[in-house]
Length: 425
Image (cartoon, rainbow, N blue to C red):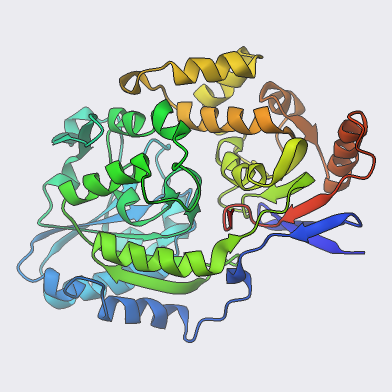
């Protein structure tokens, strides 16, 4: 009898699945890189795509800003940051370097989280600034996005002599892929800019899906924004389920990111297996800290669950629901169809906080029932239109009861151990 483990926070939940119809898993889980993590990043920095090396770009530049990811992303900055700093100081030992934490519209990253991310030495010795999307005094306009929204970004980035970014590339549920241009939009953008880019018509666009770049209006605005902000160089990595670097790219924001996407496409695309029950996760900590983020893993299940089926979502949610607007939207509106109609009738410039996540979540819920295995209070799970469960075995029993009431006596069960690492077609 197959026994499958699913990441849950920093732990694993294991269950036996006798009715297993398949396992959708990224090949990254079995991919062995040819050299160490440090060597991979070093090689990428020394052989950039479409760009001079970082140390050459740093020559003569006094005010250099490195955009770095925040606490919600498992970017191995302990590896990336020292290597990028060494490159910059090789080119200009006197440069004034600032790490700008790209929180987007998330809460600010704490000192403890910065230490966990960078290590104590960098936190104590380097200048680190946390982006605040609502701090208007430290935001500047760079013009109008192709879609019509205003591009507003952090003043530190706009006034830098050299703007570079670290990050990681993985499948993304509406931008196609994370990384690259996302360091600027939404990473260091003003709230109104993020709202506009994440508007309802863009989210509903058929190209705004996992692994989709060509014709994706969200990606197109993001790339334009990165170029307008003069993001000159990126160093992005691909990580496996153990959060280890298995691939690295560096160089031009467009060309380097494209190379990273090509690697991921070869490793992460899996064929859908239509199933009655689909179990998915957000890959564990730090991506499953709240229900808001867990929508990402649900979209992998959405792409392969049969209409009217059941998604079992496994996410520890140590931080609870993760977004007041997101939570209140579902608590206060019980009719998903009315909710979706409201989203689609909202003009881009009036997009509200968390609307995009709510829209995608509503889309998932309209396709399948969702049973949520988490540490969240049952009442909050129910407010979010999901059914609470406290173990995988309990969730599976509940799913079978739901389907039995619909006349499905022997439901098929599909496992997606890491829903944010696969592109389901």
